Image 1 (cartoon, helix red, strand yellow):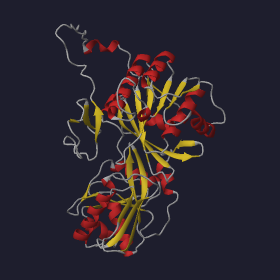
Image 2 (cartoon, one colour):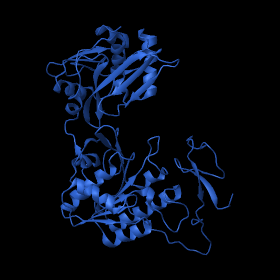
Image 3 (cartoon, helix red, strand yellow):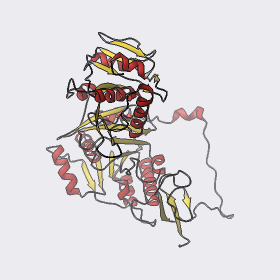
Image 4 (cartoon, one colour):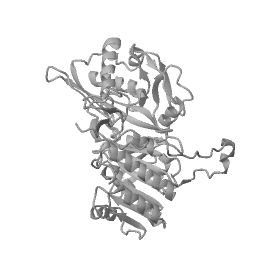
Length: 454
């Protein structure tokens, strides 16, 4: 091995003298890759004098201009960003390939340039012709102020931004860029860090926002070193099932506002359109009187969203029963099956179990535990539940039903959609609205007995 070679973990950026299959610092498997060692630029010599910088009191910091959120014109993006983009900020938009990142940013570019803003689209992965075909599909006419730059050299892109000062720069993607003064291929740990730092400096120097597109790994994490997420000001994540037309846009990090707002978007022929009434959209195709179907309520940011949980139980065709989930944590399903068998006498451990969060939603909140248990019990006994019934609650290993957050918002949303009965954890039947009747339970057995599923 050359003395100029080191091994870096792409998850935590830990350094090692030799390759290993597992990172000793963070425990990730297969994350250590070979990199060229960067020159030691931090070593000081005795003959170099460094002048100290002036310090400023926080009491005098009010004279600096506050960060101003400038609306983008896309309601879903503005909702997630808390109002809009900040001048000089750098935002990372991540998501699986084909999920709609480029479509969303193309829409953003079209809206801003149509409002007399200069937008620069840096085409690192796709050719300008490919992007133009997407733009033609989204808009019948292209604004004059929507420009492109077919370049992958990070220093050239940064110099162009500092000179042209576009109102917004979109770089698709950070993994396709390379800084020529550093060794390594585009997408390597060292190159991604250096390119992100170079572009962040250009954003601050020009006082113009930059949006980076980032890919994700097979585990669903943002690709590249973890330091990439520290360099940027905001990390947005676009998620959803590619076979469904719903997408969720959420902020994982936001230095200029909260991270508790989530936008539901629908993929259409004209791009990603915001869904204003999430619950009605997800409930409109629900089939009535089907065994193994129950409605529960998720909290997406500050907004409640009713979703249907479906379960299907079939005899095991092979020696090992099958467990399949869509939008639900498979480990959580295994735990609930064990609790149902041990604490409630409902044994589906020897059967194939399929559980689905209808609509392609990612429903990994423990508040849906009671709904999963009801769906499994109803499917096992082939007993359809009342379509106007909804439930929520977390289930512990002892079979107890635990309280969850924001029950009032969930109850109001259920009443708004016309549900008449809801089963909730003990102490959480506050302020039922309209014709909604809430029944409190403290154990899983008690909840199942109410519906005759014990």
